[in-house]
Structures are given as C-alpha cells and as structure tokens.
Image (cartoon, rainbow, N blue to C red; front, side):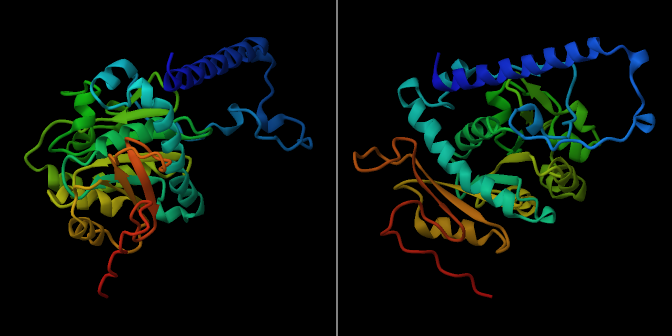
Length: 324
C-alpha cells in the first residue's frame, strides 16, 4: 500500500471509529432519561483540550447528495497521470505539505470578510498543470485535522476535474449558479473523509455569464463562510478565457501554476497583473527537472508566496510593480 493510500485509509478508519462511538453513546443513554438543556443544572465545565480529531471537526455541515458517495480510485488517478507514480509519491507528498503551509497560514491570518479559505488555482496558459495541482492539493489539505475541503471544477470549457472523477452529466456549479439547483443536489461527498467534489455541471452557452453572476459568487462565498472549510477552485487559464478572471475575483487567494522553462516570464506577469492587488498570489513552479542539489524534484521545483514570487530560483528577476 502506498503512502497516500495508507494516509487515506487511516482517515477512513478514524471516521468509522467516530461513527461507532457516536452510535454507542446514543444507545447508552435512553431518550426518556435525557435531560433537556433548558432544565439541566448549571455546572462549571472543564475546558476541553483539542487533543482528538473529534474536537477539531468543522462545525459546518456540507450540503451534499445523499444518493451517491464518490469513490476516490487512487490507482485510476495514477494511471491517468493525475497522481505521481509510486516511486515519486513520498517526495511529492512532502512537497505538497510544504506548498500548502503558506496557504493555511494566510487563511489563519486573514479577516473573515476576505475569505482567504476560498482559493482559486489557475495558470497563465493551458497545459501548465493546474488540474494536477488542484487535485493533489485538495488531497493534501483534506488530511489536515479539523478541515473540510470542497474541490470545485470551475473550468467550464475543459472541465478536467469532472472528467477525471467520472462526473460528466452530473449537476454542478453551472446548475447551481444558473438554474437554481440546490447545493445538496450537486456536491458529492467522497470516501475520503473531509473531501467533497462539486463538478462543473451541465454545459451552457452562457457559462461565463453564469459564473459572473452574483448568485454564483454568493454560492462560493457561502461555502467558505466557515473558515475551517477550504473551497479549492480549479479555474480556467487566466489569459485564455474571461471565466478565470471571474472566479479569481471571488477568491480570497490565488495559486498560479507556471510550467518551468516553458512559460515566458512576460506571460506570467500579464496573468499576475490580471489579479487584483488585494489578493495574495502564490506562484508554483511545475515540472522542474531533477537535480541533486535541489530539494524539489520532478514535479515541483518550488513555490513563491506573496506578490510577486518566482519559485526558488534566486536569479529570476522580480516582477514589475503595477502602475497605480
């Protein structure tokens, strides 16, 4: 069993143990003996120590479908090239632990109205690895204690997340934003505790207008209302379609995936400049060739945080400041 498989299996076992404990407690106290809260005798409670996973569970219940639970097939994801091969898995898992830390730190430091837990993953151009990043980042974030992660397919044109998880034809973001479909009819829970998926939804000729609508923005903001819930949007490339800019404008922070040694610097600058100045931008350098002296390997060469940042390459010149 691989590293990721062991971690996910552990999460599933913990979820099963919590359910059994809850059922046992319910059986131990008959309903007739339960004391209503209003009539209970006041007492001094000892502060709870958040030493268990139960005490760290998010309070918000994610509205999701009850007719289906999505199975995360790691072998299928690996065969499709969405997960690293087993020989690179441990190194990639460690890199994502490092990559997600500044994102989590910004979530903790941000004010509630900033919605820093609403994260858009994008790129300047197609083919830079943003969907690969979105899925692996979602899996890594789902292992955080006390967090819930909703992976949203916001790329209405390509809808890679929807294809990869076999959710074509299922209701999703476009249906919720355009046709008034309830979130509970579109979000799917998965067999990975704390991980949920919201597909792109039914193709629509007015997808840009739907994504630009206040209803869609309000739907995403409502999902991120609980700061312990992370909404991760796999957005379209910034310089290809206007849909990306719409979702990025709603997000509280942005991850910009850049393909190493291929994406021109001026193209990256244009994409970064399209993001408003009040949003933190992380640039993630993807597909860096392995080198003995580098900590990062085949998949990710480094990450930068703030505005601007260019991975771990010290010789890379900084981005130009925007004109006021």
